[in-house]
Length: 195
Image (cartoon, rainbow, N blue to C red):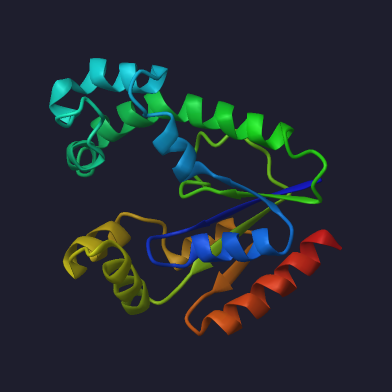
């Protein structure tokens, strides 16, 4: 079994690359999905977040309002570090659980937004950075999230640059074209990793 980590900034097409790899037979472990699940009401991460940030992050049903929480941590490095300190341990534990449930697979793909963060503890056989031109990323993200272009550009500014992906990742996929072109690139990547 090989483990690859796939990452990319907002609107780059990281999740699409992961879905294509899944169609090719890989097991897919989605860090974002896990981070949503560990924040469900009553969970350990939920309790720690409410205790740290206060009830102001809750909606009328007592669930964590992700937008309120994001607004608190987005421009405050200390608050973001606190949130990461609370959630990362639970995310990584669940990712390891899911890896051990897929030992029979040839390839396990980790869909991880912050793969190159200093505290990522899971060893990958290869890493993949998905990049795209800024205008394309803004267009995709605003269409998908109904977000304003300037908000997306702000997020892009706070994310790893394409240049950094080239220096950090084992493979870089440029996703500026059609889905057919992307599928072709991902199939080539899959063959070279599985070989």
